[in-house]
Image (cartoon, rainbow, N blue to C red; front, side, top):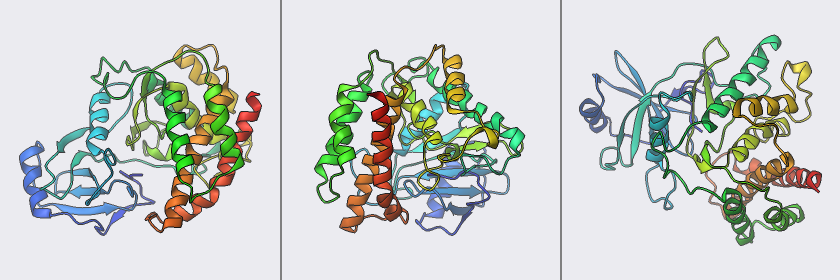
Length: 352
């Protein structure tokens, strides 16, 4: 996860090296108005794709790069991230302005892009506890508005008709994550996951839709205005593609049932005393904004998303056991796997 502007995370020592002279020369040739000298700091976030703050006497930028070294095919495609943000810039979806992209790995050792430095706040707590209680509902409404705007963008009109495979999103995703789960024998099997692998393909709701989806739409992947309930930029488009909007929205709304110690969530807390809308009211607001009467089979979409996240954590567990997990949080995520699988099965049982 990147952190474009977050006082709590900040930027400091460069951990993944950059050739400063080569980068400065490239910026001077490719970014309008760039003028050094250049100072480089690396954000504490951005573990997947290293992210840097670039400072000059007159401007600040953010650079996001692929990690150096051998990578799996298609992994860490930062130029894809840049493409979707360039396409969405100027729509109702707030994104950072992209100044330039670089395919030439010889400049700093990997592909990268440079975007605007957006100042604001990042909230790591889904209850928005840093905000006065009476103001929190407005922040939730803003998130709801932004994801509805994303799902209302005509992908062909913004040049993203080929950004992913249209149609059969759930069948393809269920197949992908089921195979990954079943093939990682070292990480072991869980009865809850086995039940979901069997049930999910049989329960896909009728009808199909295709929109641009973010893939990881959470409160901590947005930069809010310093003082207002307004999103200035949606971050981390690494998982974006063409997909089913209800999968994307349900992943976002999963925060209502997600334990806070796994991913930013509200499980165990009643939203109303916190000044937040209920899950039902939040769904209704999204439906109103996207022209829906309701969302039938809601728990299927939750079961799918908890299963998908559990499959990802199952893969992390396998890497922990093999000694190849580099993320400091990997062991905690591996330990959370049974709880995620149980939440997925709980949603599945509500559908039956």
